[in-house]
Length: 133
Image (cartoon, rainbow, N blue to C red):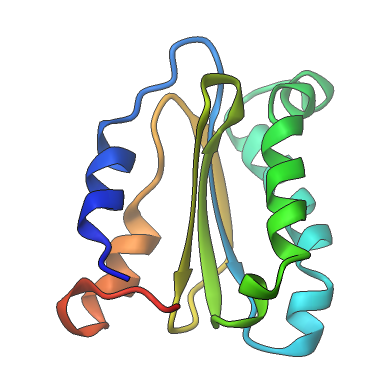
């Protein structure tokens, strides 16, 4: 899958009143895949804390995003890549899940725009900006 059309939409997105959630998960082993939803929740809680947001308020603002992540992780697509990058702002009808071929450090961030740093680092290692899957 070529990343450029996805990358352009992700870069342009700005949340107006909602939170934009960027989430990078390792799915490289059966254990990592089995525990991914739990790690996603913990990473998002940490991202909310770093952003200075109240945990309960923040979790209510990203609840639909976490549900989309959970649903994706239940699909067969989650087992076909070493890692995945999620860019979600469900309240503003934006969602992208990009399977990535190589491992990357797990992270999450919330804010007005998406955190593309880990994605750019991952793509720099892959020929011609290709995604897994």
